[in-house]
Length: 163
Image (cartoon, rainbow, N blue to C red; front, side, top):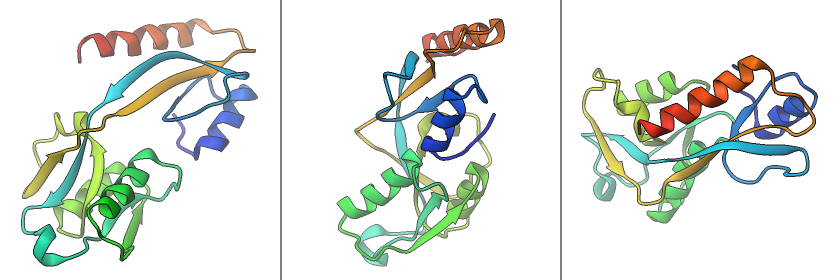
């Protein structure tokens, strides 16, 4: 598994360095095809002691990848709430982002599904967002699908049936 920005991953996919990738938004349909898509519910996380109206503009806790869907949603949500002072703290991992929110450092938008298996988050308020995120699993059109890639595609499709 690799995490890079969207453009780098698409280049790696095109040249066969990776077998597939997950992407939100547009991709080059002349070079890639979607083999599966899913809609993911998202939530705003903040610490229970933070009062949006009284405390003013929260710090945005985001991924350091500027093309990250959840980073951009976090910034968009803050802007929609009228917060214009762009205080941002960047982290490279989801775990670091969750720890920062749990410590009361700010707010973040994350996939709702990742919270299902986490019982250790203390003092966190989660607010559902009405607009889900659409995620596509794409592969290269010019490359033959290996048996392991075919198994992975079947696996992710089976996960969606259980959601």
